[in-house]
Image (cartoon, rainbow, N blue to C red):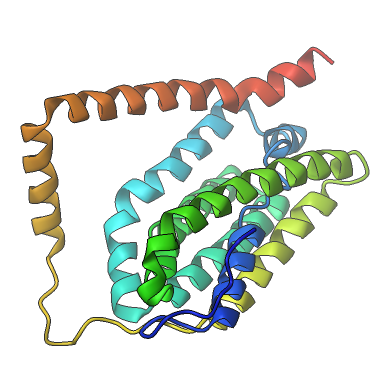
Length: 249
């Protein structure tokens, strides 16, 4: 079970940590994950258009990973999490009603943007929220990831089953889950931050440090390059599986 003991000093209360757990599970739902390509093809969009829209989805984190991290540091991680959940709801609504390919393109970019605002901010929030109980961080994070896979798999099946009734069901549930995520994130207690006068490394310094580390560790660089190629190939294959299975009945 996930630990919900009272956070140590300089963390947050157990109620806020439980609220964060619920946020994580709600935002891991995948009601449209198995049917969104089928839905778009049923609306008359071609597979080449869908592939281009998927490219817009992946472009967003590349462009916005650093700016979204700065947003979380300056404005607050809970607001970064709330914005990420709101973008999920907006993108799902736009895709469902999209009158043109350009709306789909914008919706997919916003969906990718939602990942930028949630990724990193969620782990940083949990780490700081645990306070002096940070020794349990990796264990809790692992359990959250495992629970997220279970929730994702179950909702993936449920969304596909409901789409046989109407595509409005899975898309409506995504919008509802996104709005629930906004409410949950907005109610989180922000952990204490570092002193205002303490200097923060700039984005340029982060990039320089990463480049330096990769040059010092060529095996790590090679593993990252292989991983990127592997997941890129897998993503392309997965992207068209829905259409392929549909054609085969």
